Image (cartoon, rainbow, N blue to C red; front, top):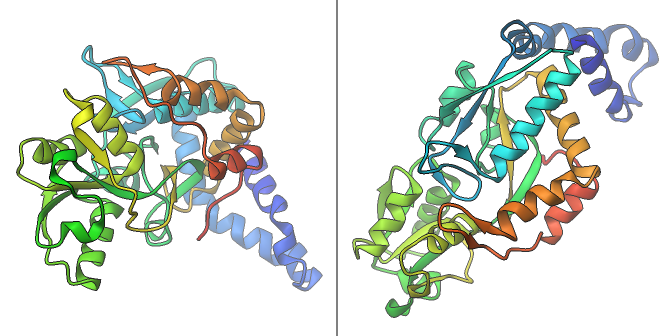
Length: 314
């Protein structure tokens, strides 16, 4: 089974190597790549086959992507997608059952957990970029988001320039805090950056007037606002700290067989239209625990991804 997925993975990308000599292509190149990938790539699949268990890393407060409800249930858009992926893997490996275990993966611990093998799939709101792909791998994108800030409407802070000389919070271990610090240096804004361990802590700093703004992915800011005590008191900036980037399921690096299985599952979920009901459940319907609706239609970037799933490599 593992060899079949590895073979299909490389065969589907054969066009990249058409210029190579046929003898190299036929005799040396695929075999050497398969041999290199084999010892690592088979490990996750073998572990799942042996234990009939897959471990999902999740956040505690990442509404609506990945969070824990009051009764201890792990829930969210990314979680629902990953549970469907787990079922696809069960079927592909011809297992009679598969158990899904959960492990908390914070922004500060998620990379270590995936790299160490303690988490098989990190299912949250993790941005896929070139720097991170040096450490881990990512599935096809399942969302697109941009970095913005939230502030109290009464503050009058609407632009990034308005934050000059202020205290601004962001979450450790995220692209967002890197973008905030980069903009701060580049434009000499003299912002005092406050570090939060989790998103809810950063938002609480704004709520309690410890910070003038909280910088995070716009959709996660929308979640914090929607589930706050007074949503009408907050506004999310139009200004962005950078272009929209994709979220992906974080996977072990160089694990070709496992990544292929995950992407095959996503391809089926996306192109069958199943993803539409999952998306509508979390972004176009009331979401627990407070049953508030994000009313966030699918973006053009995401709709294109669902129509023609492809890896993001920018």
